[in-house]
Amino acid sequence: MPARNVIVFPTDFSEMSAGALPWVRRMADQLQADVHVIYVVEEPHIYATLDMGPVPIPSVDELTRSAEKRMANFVDAHLKALGGFTTRVLVGRPAEQLVSYANSHKAALIVMTTHGYSGLKHVLLGSTTEAVLRHAACPVLSVRSG
Image 1 (cartoon, rainbow, N blue to C red):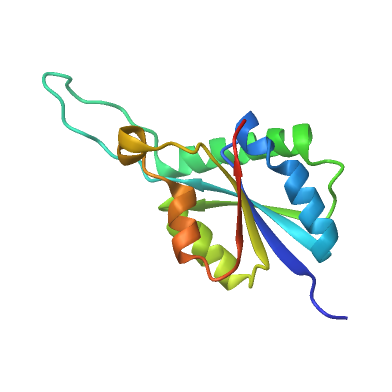
Image 2 (cartoon, helix red, strand yellow):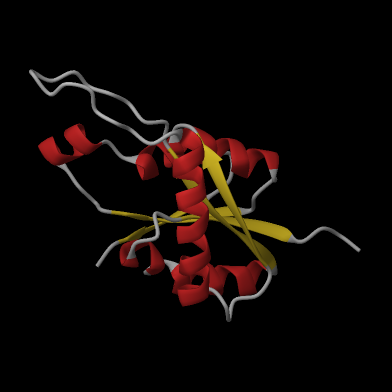
């Protein structure tokens, strides 16, 4: 039996990312694909500020455990009817991890949302979607948030 296609669906657990689910479902049906729901934990960074003193930051393990709980809640709320999905929590830079994951799983498609920021806001916030679009080996469907 040939392997099924894979669609990578990155999420940040927001309603905005859930807004891409109609497209994920449609494309999964069209491509007869399994959906891999991915969240990427970024390693925490400390930026020095004046007179703040020590700032407690969560460990990567704590962030990963929290993300796994949030993933379970997201799946319960949005994906139960989908069937044929896998969940993963990865650690690193989101765009790099998403592209690497898609490549290693020979993804047929990545479906993700974008804020559609431009100008200064785009410069300050960056764009994971843009970086994925630039570096992914497979097609990327970018769904603009409402």
